[in-house]
Image 1: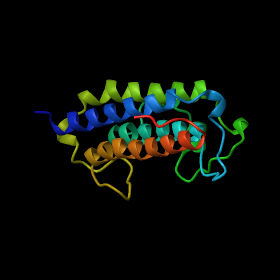
Image 2: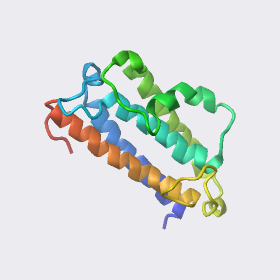
Image 3: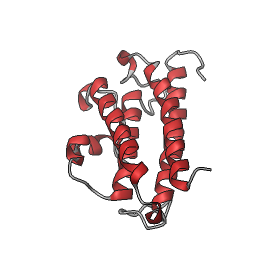
Image 4: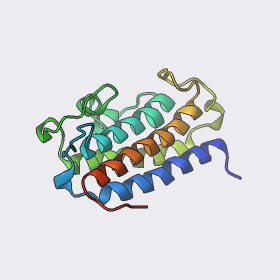
Amino acid sequence: MMNSLEVALHQIQAVRRYSTDLIESIDHADWYRMTDEGISHIAWQVGHLAMAQYRLALRRVRGPAEGDDELISADFLRVFGKGSTPVPQPEVYPCPDEILSVFHHVHRRVMEELPQFPISRLSDPPEEPHPLFHTKLDSLLWCGQHEMLHAGQIGLIRRLLGADYRW
């Protein structure tokens, strides 16, 4: 039987496999395209997932750490953070390869650091408050749920760009 930390990490890993499969199916030339509805684009979605996983699974659980600035820059956090608005100008954003690099490096760091996190501290309040949860475990659980929500948006954008259904 998995403990609560293992369950949260399993959820994060499973959702990441699904969202990565969706993301890898989209040509980089389409990353900044906004459909007629003009709500979002793939570059923003992927950057936002990297930012959110850093904040939800690392920053709120263990607090800031040495090397975080090299992992994900303050500018990256600003461009893809809560309250940012996707715009169809590629020059506003890093290139797809850079976004993907941060996306993968943050996830790798989560999967390296968190298996050793003390289970006894999961019931502690997060290092930074959040209106949707009150414990570090809830931050980790929300991390996977939040990514699945955005995987749905990525899937919808794919379809609006003309791609076939993908499971």
